[in-house]
View 1 (tube, one colour):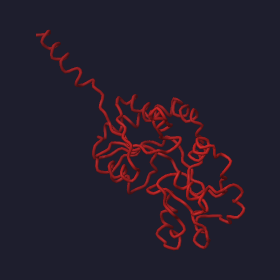
View 2: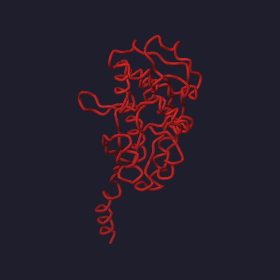
View 3: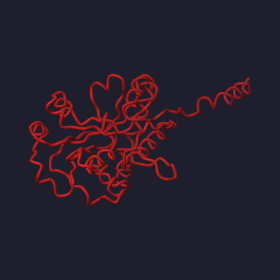
View 4: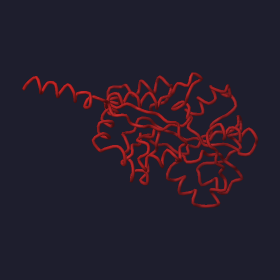
Amino acid sequence: MIKSLLLVALIFLPLYSQARTISAGWEIWYPYQYRNKAQQLLGADFDILNAAAARAGFNIRYSEIPWRRLLQFVKSGEMDIAMGVSYNDERAQDAYFSVPYRLEVIRLFLKKEQSAKFTLNSLTDITLSDYMIGIEGGYYYGEVFAGLMQDPKFSAHFREAVDIEGNVLMLVKGQIDGFLVDPNTMKAFGKRYAMEEEFEVHPMVVYQSDIHFMLSKASVSADEFARFNQALIEMRDSGQLAQILNAWSINTD
């Protein structure tokens, strides 16, 4: 009898010990998510998600997906997790938000030695200006910005690009006067393309927010989310999270 029970346990042990695979979407976003020449996935967000998943007992399957589509896939449950997400109430209806794992700051970047010509103290000043500013489609620039974009007189001053490369190209061509971007992304972009001396940052802070992982309520259980979130908390409390961010030269303040 004992031998039979042991045999049954051995047969079913792999079923219980096999780690659950969760799907995560990503899009090129230096220095958080990108692919090198050897096609390896690199970046702070990958390192943090991989470490948290290992602690929680998950495997990760990555797919490169445009940002807007990824948000829809997480909502529907076609994808389990998105990285680098700002919280808002609409997204929280269909997804769990982890504890924050880094800070995002959005600033206005201009061509070198142009800041003095931009007499802006707040976002509302843009409405009465002659400036045209680049943004990335599908990205969240804060509640204040989202509210102002409902006003056609404000939204008329913005042009959408797919990514930072698109905004830089529009700036170089003179199609925009500046663009909104995270300084860490701008720093990595400048270093990658040897353009570190081509741009400068305007004093105005457009937006600052905690950044989270967003997990689908349609495909991830509450218990699975709790395990993942606890793993991230342990990483934060142990200092592992700060170590990863520091290794990528990302400000943790």
